[in-house]
Length: 475
Image (cartoon, rainbow, N blue to C red):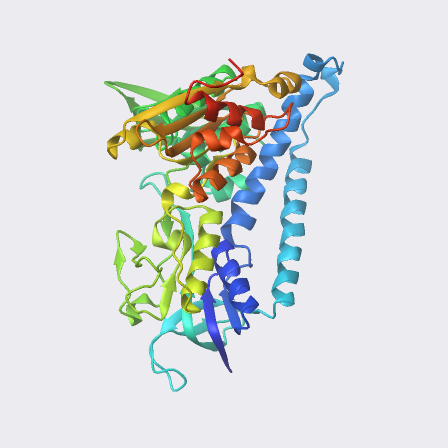
């Protein structure tokens, strides 16, 4: 059987299904080819399940510290049922998955369940881009389209010598399936995923050791934010080693867990824990999808695209993680929209990397958009900055969480807003206002002049914007 549509999408993650919906809204016939379940890594093995676990960790810690708010709790009666935590996570994923399936039906989007591979020109299409789909029963189905969007995403990177075994050595997919919490965990990699797991496990009472090769955790974020988060994690018991390199050849699996050496500066230190989590980035899913049957170029393991997200075959687009850009669900979704609008003949472009919000759902949360102070200076700007501590904000005091600050980076000559960096409660929500400011090219004083409700955490952002020009009313 052959399915013929206007646009085919290979991969049903956030980028793929958003592209499909946008195309369907414009009356195009669309098919998504997905080997697993629509929703992709984000819904089933990433964003959603991990945030559900982080929320349980937050509630657990809130109960343990309830007396801070005058609420007396018998702490001997507080216990953690990790099986119930996992069940709640699965329920959240299942609810969203059912909703997504209904959304596909509403828009008339065909879902072809199977592994898709690009083949050459067919009798139905003179251009390569036809998909041969291997179905679960071993049969093959063809999907022919005028345009194809590759949205196959990525998977956890493997460190040679530290290959995950699902037992003592885990990747993030394995960690989400844990049936019980380990007593201790070594986390290799202090990027976003590693930091979120370090925060979550620490709050669950797991002894965590975080190892990062760079000089600080979250090395891509503002140094002030990285430093503040490291301090917060250490204050809760996490051990953090930076400028550290794990030596995979020393890995020793034993009855009590694992041991591995790490080179920290000039010293070699033996690290021991019940389990080890490898979190060192992701690699694109480019194998087995038939790229060899096209003229599509792959560089450094990523599919190459132009400014309109077209590959070297103009009728084939690529979006999301597979292109090696900003590896975030919302980035992929907006790229999917941009690709479809380009197909429709609209003058559009994917969002610039520095205008995509970056969020870390640790405790405290961090969020940022734009350039760090260091990046701004490297780009030739003479930055002026301001920091507004949450301790100066009434709502933060009322809520009992005054950790962190809002940092604004602006150009000292033009006044342009270059970056916003937040660490503190609800940072991942507050960053949306800064994203809007970037979209409309607002300068700090304009954001500060907008009325922020009192008391609210949003006042921290407004006051930080005013503080750039020395006009904050908070301090």
